[in-house]
Length: 419
Image 1 (cartoon, rainbow, N blue to C red):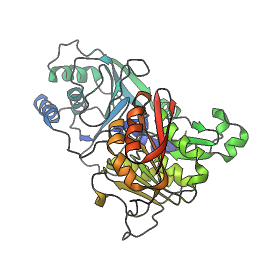
Image 2 (tube, one colour; image 1 turned 90 degrees about the vertical axis):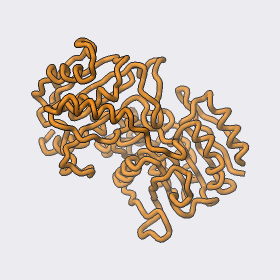
Image 3 (tube, rainbow, N blue to C red; image 1 turned 180 degrees about the vertical axis):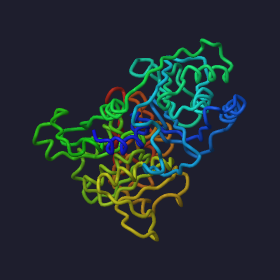
């Protein structure tokens, strides 16, 4: 890979690291000489800060991994490569890995590592992929029972000194943080990131494809030559927000839309909890006249806008007095205030999809019923198979009928028609 290509990839490596990841708000990292008192104060401030109040919390924040990244005080919030410098040099990155950590405040550990010079800290469920895996959603839900923690440093960092100071900052016993240090070469790092996101088949003829595979033959991943030529490809930059195709609920919802693509032609579609924008983008590519993506997380809305552009879709104004095309609209809203939502939704939506959480899915049934026109459809996920009776009961009461469910790996999608 040419150096220029590698340099272009690296600024976005961290947000591609984790499928289903949420990149938490960045913190300004001090130099490696940050005092113990300052680091401790930062950790205490973080622990005592309450989450921002929200009327309805329905956003899926993370499943298996949270990424926090340090930023220099001179960098802006832009995601461009010029203003968002790569966290690692082309020569690679030094990593510290702590496996199956329990009994330590992970938030304070993150703060201490970032203050000591880490460019990024990744926290993962140590039980991911097992029967003990536990998904965490929303704000204030804590962390997993056991965590794998990876801290990344510029090459040549004295990681033993960093870990010694981190242990001291946290007031832990010298051997409390058992870690392994390793160097990951730059070329290997880029390839590892790219290999972790392969094209995902949703159904015959419908695929979710990472941007670097957009023009590749899908036969490499099991498609026939004919399918590779004609398949719908929803192109995403993985890791920006929830909805990369790895989770069953994303596949269930996009598959539900794909099987109804004839109905979608000319339809008005709302994607509530849009995340990466995959469902709204998919609906628009399938022929929806208007697709509206709504999310309470501004980062998700930015991610959805980036992904829309990758698919050749322009993002228009949300309201009638806004300039531009309104065939694809994104809005930051949580469903509690009509004035935050795009115009033209009430009673005029043909299809509403919501891949969020069971609690909000149930609570928002009256709101969704007010959007969907008689004869229109609703598709609801983020729901476990065992939770579908509560969803069906709520939507029957809200005025929907012919409610059915489909499932995959213990997750379900519930769909029905507005009376």
